[in-house]
Length: 104
Image 1 (cartoon, rainbow, N blue to C red):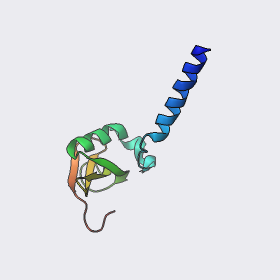
Image 2: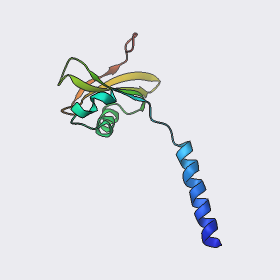
Image 3: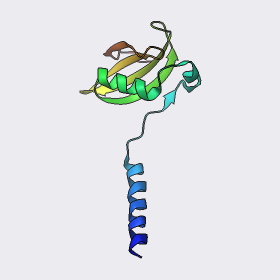
Image 4: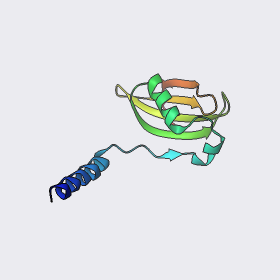
């Protein structure tokens, strides 16, 4: 009986923590992912290392500069939103600046 109660408590905690975990923002551009050599997870880590904060938007897009394929992240840091672009082929940081008045 004790094992059953412990397993039940673990299952409840696991399901509760999954619900309480912050959701990742939606990912647009997944149809381009087969052309990327850098994974979304790696690009996210690179972006947050370049601009610590909370990612509020993410996409994979074709855009001028670098290889022409980039991950673009909006990162909220110190009350401001920054756009960080990571080349989806090389993993290099292509952009790291304040979001302009007309965000994408």
